[in-house]
Length: 304
Length: 226
Image (cartoon, rainbow over all chains, first blue to last red; front, side, top):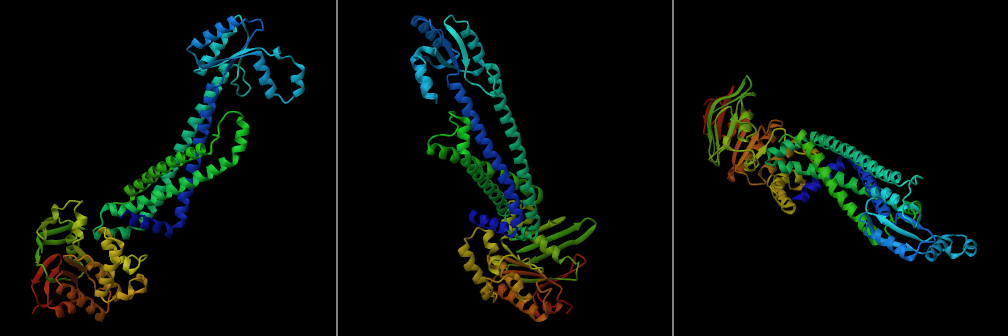
């Protein structure tokens, strides 16, 4: 039975292709924006998670700090509830090794002694809002030379400014993205309402005949509902495809920009799973949007 | 099979039917006659429940139509086959698809629809036209197609509203003969017409209307006074 209604819907679409194209184009735009927004939200989430889990605070220790003093400070830091995860001690030698690995000037590593770089304690806080107070406390420790915050954004070295910037960007992206999506969804539903409303008007005589012959309201309505779903699903798929191809094309640029922040999963399977899940969600959303638009049109224009 | 008991129908200030009482038995072939505006089509639409009476009762197969609720209406209408004067064939579908629409509505499979469509078209003499479009058929052929659509689902009653209105006398007679054949096979036929010649020739049950009132209800006989 559904096969017949879908077939009827496809016949309607074939007979008025330009209306169909207009409806699908609006859906494509909506779901292109949705896919892009979803990916931006994902990237932001990964970025924030990266800063939250990476050693955000590095407390450089004075050269005359004794092992006992370092051990005490390490213990104290581990027991601090504001500190998340591991507290890592980086010795002079290890610091030198890291410097050697990251520098592209081999001559520099030959000329400096191994103990020129200070030892340090590296750790993260459970919430970025704690960072500033923790930094201020560490600065007062006897064996601490200086404290650095690694989560730098927009040139701001001050922890509270960085935190605010990150939170602001996330907040604006979420609000802006959600507003844009809401507006586009409204436009999409309105477009469907108009297109399907026109279909109903054009087929009024046919609907009258069907009703007199004993068609139930469901029999009359279902092809229009399926039509709405087809427009929305086609738009969702094409919007998703365009956005995905664009992002895949930009992957090298994205990886370069974000550096070591793993915004793009390494495993192909993970990428596939993420995009697969996103497509599934968008198809479901498309069905909802398609049904909503078609239902409003039927309620407005079809009186049976 | 059909009983009208003091049925009145008003459209605002206009009274289309005034206390009409009539009866059509099962297996009957009845004409509803009268000049234009006498209420013939109103009776047809009342039986189809496209309209409801202002007062009075309409009984169809022991069911009071006034008590039918909206959900039962489609299933009631599937007991009736309709032949409209303006045909109401869908121009963008083939004759076969038009005929089979009645079965499609009832959820019959497409394969079965096609088989029954062929049978119905063969019955009315249009078996070679199943894949033609309405625009490719002549007036008489179109009316035959409409009749095929009205019988494909074996209805209890055929309602024909001026089926010969746009046809020449020869073709009109063929159409009425086809309806008579359907009636002979057991289906009740109720035909609205103002064609006196056909009514006289057929010698069937005649219900004559004038200005919304029944002026004659003869089981058989002529349109005019004997």
